[in-house]
Length: 138
Image 1 (cartoon, helix red, strand yellow):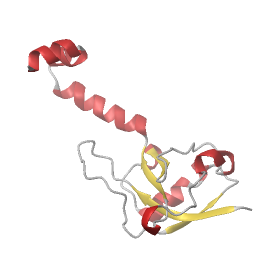
Image 2: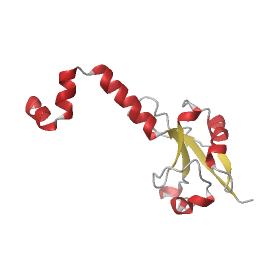
Image 3: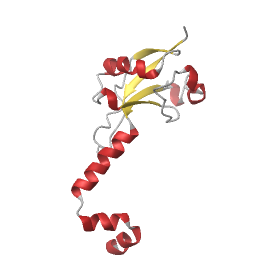
Image 4: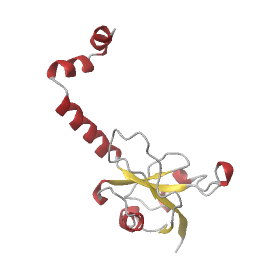
């Protein structure tokens, strides 16, 4: 039974307009992942230990060293290519983390919902046609 012990953090990206997103907590806890169990079966433990604000069903796992998202349906053993370089220390002796964050599709959907709720049809037309937008702005 192979395991990976590493730091875990979360990124509170539930507000798409919050531009000061930094992984939390600043002193991340360690979490032990089993390399032979799909991540979907382990993510609830990460969510619980971090007390993350995201809904569990909306969560994804991202590697801090290269920005890759891990496939939750797969095991860590099946994702060795993405994990390459993860256990090496980063700059200034920093160790890398696995970051729990909102799935990209959920964030895009939230932005789209805001976009369609706020804009009038004429504004939407301008934004969907960049030359018109440029002409309108300048």
